[in-house]
Length: 384
Image (cartoon, rainbow, N blue to C red; front, top):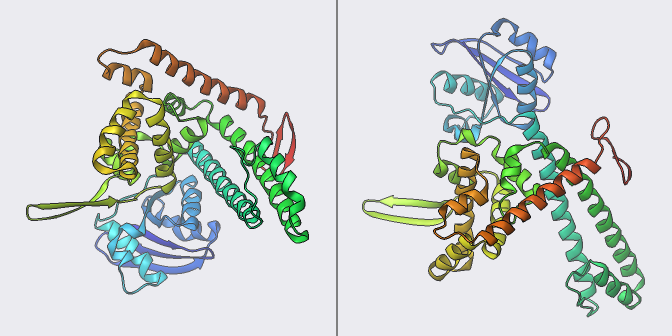
């Protein structure tokens, strides 16, 4: 038998189906682990199929801990569900059981608890960065409306803030209040960023894959943690092409007869993973001979924007090989170089070691007691 569960925030609709497609029982129930467990108790040795919604993921974890054989699927990749003109809880639970019974369903990857912890923190840290950019843009717009242009390289560094302070009296009463509030928000966001980065360093400190990625110039512990959290385990990808496809950095392809047309990148997979790869690509073309050479050869043919995407794609394949073979970036590039410049590789080694030491130092200084609702650090106490 197979059981399909259509899970919502407050309710769960269950369908129990025989191997031949006959329905044994269908029931709508409250989304309560005791109630769902009571419904499934007689079918403990059979397959349970659940959609990968937020509520579905939570229920699948609870049922897994109770010993059920859980299969988590993405309904968007199942045409019988996503394209079904009849969208009801009863129909969806029926289709989950029926399509799984026929073998037409691919399960999604469920990350480990450590990876989920890192992923949650990295995504929140990234959202803080976006929030910070929004606040800074508002300050730029406010000052520009008064014809004030900050000349400092970093408008929100010490020199830049002094310039803003000197221009403060040129603003009217209400805009002074707005500017003070925005500057206070920026200070608060930066402090939260530091706290989250400390937490990430604690969790990531013993992760060998993260330390491997930190040997790549342009990747610090935060970026490395972000990439690994979105990948999970590299072993779930058969080859580097499959991994590149997962990143969404491969072009769309339309073939008809002898004609093949390649379009824009697919943008499939996690957008945050793609963001980290593209950001790192910008650093790589500045600091590594290998990627700089490839970038210059591509930019002549495709232009700067497409060339950066191509470098990000090459970086993704490089990351795949590094993680698969447990190889550091320095060792990989050195073996690919005909006449290696040992001074250059020595500098890469020093940079890599410095980044790892910084992560270790940050992790050592962050003392986490209890759960994440009460974080205590050496520099002070922050109660969420």
